[in-house]
Amino acid sequence: MVLDSLGKSLRGVLQKIARGSTVDEALLNEVVRDIQRALLQADVNVQLALSLTERVRRRAKEEKPPAGASLRDFLIRIIYEEIRGILGKDQPFDLRPRKVLMAGLFGQGKTTTTGKLARFFQKKGVRVGVVAADVHRPAAIDQLEQLSKKVGCEFYANRNEQRAEVIVREALAAFPPHLAVIVDTAGRSGIDTDLIEELKRVRAVLQPDETLLVLDAAMGQAAGRSAEAFQKAVGLTGVILTKLDGSAKGGGALSAVAATGAPIVFIGTGEHLDELERFEPTRFVSRLLGMGDLRTLLERFENLSNKEAAEEAAKHLMSGRFTLRDMRAQLDSLGEMGPFSKLMTMIPGAGAKVDEAKMDETQARLKRFRTILDSLTGEELDTPQIIKSDRVHRIARGSGQRPQEVRGLLKHYETTRKAAHGIVSNRRLRRQLEKQFGSGEAPEE
Ligand code: GDP
Ligand code: MG
Image 1 (spheres, rainbow, N blue to C red):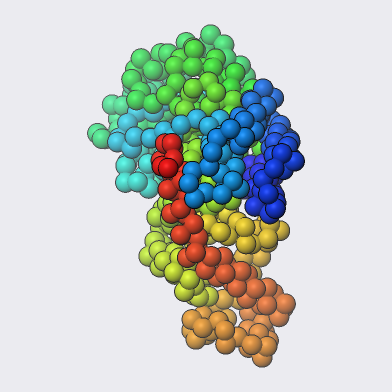
Image 2: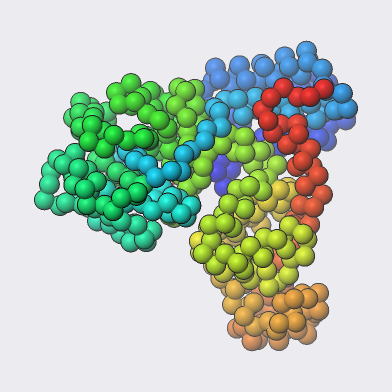
């Protein structure tokens, strides 16, 4: 998952607090040191990491927990607030049909993200037209055309035109009215006058509502300087950080960009067209710290094409009545949702209850699961408890898999079901958390 090792370390800190017998100076020192180490490993700026942990220390000593809250919970909450604090504010993103200009250097993920953003709009019922205004790389035009076909949106290109602004003018005239228009532009290896002038000419024609900078999270802290330079040169309404799935430096990139004041509006979490998420520090931090995020999960379900079965499965998952039939519906939708492990990290409680190695299930294994599920009878799908040893062997033969794999499936099911079960009690926890943290305001006493 995104910021995997940072998340693991921070969850470790919270567990340490939860397990410790008392919150005392020794524990506080240890917690401060652990958080510092975790942040620095994620490439967070040293000053930022130090001042954050200093604030944690000071607040833990000076502030009084609200009535009824334990010192332990209070410390966890301070950590949550301080980490959320370095990621900026939750920023709404307007979904009305609008004009979006994508900017950025070579290879940062502009074209891919243009496709992802197009899909994001279309899934919300807003029709999109994408414009291939990368006049420097013919391959980029083909790349965007391919993406537009997958997304099913309008596409405009003019392979004989070398002026990006002319292409944009033509596209605006050619597209049907009321489209959201997203313009993919050419990158450079660095910010130079050539790039800036081109972006300004395009902007004059497009009159964009949003100018979004696409930045690769692997830049770490350097992403902040890049955001600042673009901000000064062309003005930005937001930043999209890509490749957070593969970068150990994501924490540095996120915090450095947030520190410039440019809001991070989306993050890219994979190469797949669906792997774009709205970035909201509040929910991002709750997920990072293992508090789960029901809303992100539900949004994913909402975006599915075989919506009904998945919705049903989601409902069952949350009510604790989760059968193998529901699991099959989930597996069917995986193609669009990304790996199951990712999904699991979004289920409140699941992060803590499923062991981490399990969450790294490969797609191949899930495919085998899917094959096995096809060999089950209706009764077995609805009441998995009846599958005992003799049935395991029959199913294995029927699906051409080893009995071991069938047992693996049942175990996986059991884990998922238990995790889902945890949601019921976690709901209470969640309400409590929302009451404590949700508004971002000072707590009620
Ligand atoms: P551009 O030059 O800025 O247009 O960059 P591209 O859109 O062509 O992307 C460059 C590479 O980054 C491609 O191989 C993409 O598949 C990859 N990429 C883009 N976004 C992500 C992301 O969020 N995660 C991962 N893992 N790869 C990404
Ligand atoms: Mg490109």
